Amino acid sequence: MTKLLTLLVGGIATLAAAQTAAPYTDAKSNITFQAYQHTTGYFLGLALPNDPTGNTDVIVTIGGKGTGWSGVSLAGPMKNALLVLAWPNSQAIVGSFRKTAQYGSPLIATGTFTQTLIANGTYINSTHWTYTFLCSKCIQTDGTTFAASANTTVLGYALNSAAPSNKANAASSVSKHTSRGQVTFDLVKARSKDFATWKAWATPKVQQGFQA
Image (cartoon, rainbow, N blue to C red; front, side):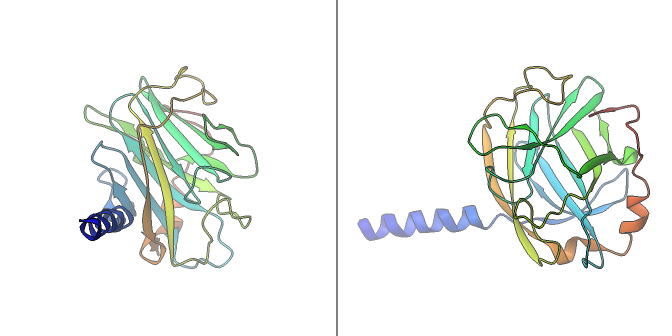
C-alpha cells in the first residue's frame, strides 16, 4: 500500500511538472507565441527575437476571463522575481510590474523595464480579455527573470477571479491567488524572425483600452 501511494504521488508530481507551453498565434495581432492556457481561461505567451545575444526585450501576452487578475513571474517563483500583474477595468486593461520578498500582495516595482502596449493584440470581448505588450529591458541578469541565452525556462503563473481592490489603480492590492503553478517554455521556439515587425507595433504612450 505504501509503495502504491508513493507511485501515485510521484505520478501526480510528474504531471504537475509536465505543464508546457505550445505554439499559439493570436487571431487579431497575428503574433505567434509560445503560450500556456489554463482551464480557467488564463493564458500567457512569449515571443522573442531570433538572436538572443544582448537582448533584453520580450513580447508578452497575458489574459483571462471575467474581472479578476492574471499574473506571471518571469523567474518562476513569486519571491524576489520580476512579476507582471494585469486585469480589466471596464474597457481598459491595467498592468503593472511588481516585486516582493515575502508572500502577500506584491508592491509596485520600479526600474528601467517598461510595458508598452501593442494595441492590435489588446482587447476585451464577451469571452475574455487580452493584454499584449512589449516588455522592454525586462530580461535581467540578476536572477529576477529568465536568462536571454536560455533555451528553456520555467515561468510561474497566478490568478484570482476576484477583481483587485481598486481596479483603476495599477498599484492596487490584490487578493491571494486561487490558482498558481509553473510552466516550462521552449525559448528557442518562442524566437521569431518577425519579432522586429511586432515590436514596432508597440505604441510609446497608452492608447484607448489601456492604463498603466
